[in-house]
Image (cartoon, rainbow, N blue to C red; front, side, top):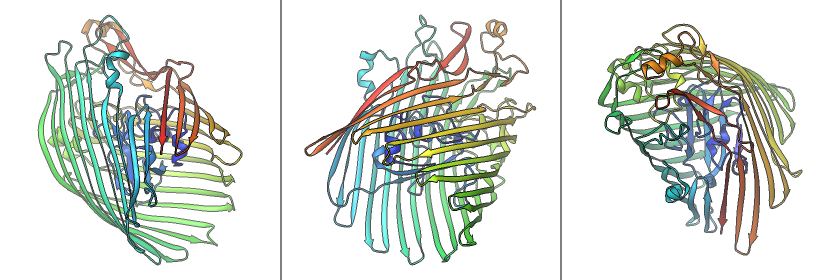
Length: 633
């Protein structure tokens, strides 16, 4: 799916957040309304590769989960967006070290001719963006934004509100007609604190006596050299994150969980793209990644709801290592460009694990049976190295292999008109060497990644496996002169995994049916109305043994019923109205949006509530009106 700035800005339910709009793509599930997790074709949010102008970014969200790609609020200022593409499977050997998807984001360049400024107030915060020329050959863009709910904490009676700042930067400069340099940077500074639970209210937030602070920074510089039949691009980039999370007991006396972790990566890579002939294209590249990961983690001994005792975790260690990677990818076209074959191979090396090297061959074919209709197929082997935090929890985990997923894909694409595109794609994802816990034999790491804390696993082996089967249908119409636009996406999926406990069970992300419908109409040049409807089969869950849970004072699952039940189906309707006001020298773009119009009480999670000795429920967003405006000079 390809998106531009305007499609994301006006999308109902997205709140001008790129991550939330990407959740509408075919094959992408929503784990929780309160988060931007991308659950792609049954895979964990840790399986997504995110690139901005070719620079790899671990996470583009405030309060992002360590070892995963999700979070509740996007860091990227939407006004920077030129385009965003998401590839949900079968991607080429150019992309590596992730199993499920590639999110390829392009920032636009700032204006070379004039200075512009913009002031925004929206659900994401209050801030401004500034852009203008750098001499006659370059430009800059800078945005700064902060949240404001903390300023209203007492007035709106919230016990915990997020406090964050973010910054986005892009510079570009033309050295000459063949050489260009650009630089991007962005950062997020996040704080939230949860006070003691209100025991007079059974529906109050059970998460108490905790804080979560995070800082994340990304910067990269790119040099592109153009020549007659291609280009060479060299990139140097760095990412840094500092995660601090602590949870105390109900009396606020004993620390039950603590995480002080810092991760830093420095990447150097070079890519060559060359057209050897009119129908023969070559892409090849090499890269090096230097890694430093410091983890101080404490987790008190606990007994799981499945009855397994998880020993106390208390580690303070540091990983200094590196990764190497290289790829070759070739595209050939035949029969007057009717047949296109894309094939290549990728090699990845991770120094710290025992099984250090993986080889990933991939091939894709596309054949035009009609001028506007193509049959497509792809096969590929995909590997993903263990997350650094997994390797820190136990020295034994350096024996983990890279996770492997084999993709098998076939489908058809048809353009009804240049603006109306429809696709149907069938797929199988076959997982091997998935980390599974030795302490909790029912746990497999691919069921994690949607938590606010680190995506942790204790002592583990690469003994898990899984399979995901399904198909995605999509109908997408761009906004044109008739005023109508929208998309219809339907996905069918069955996702199953096997951990050490044995037996094949539905994964945490197994939602059989998903339907997303977005429709909009431009009433006039300055008025726009739109709506979004989302339906999904309820997620699997394991029922609690009520009497045993009460007697033991902790949640206990019904034996042999792991993920055997289903939550109620999810559905939600969002409505939105946009209006632009033009004045001399400036304009105002405003919107009003109502999320979950019918206040559907969609259940996100069940938990055992020890305070009230009952099964508690955590809900998705209820009826939620939002609005915002952008003042453009």
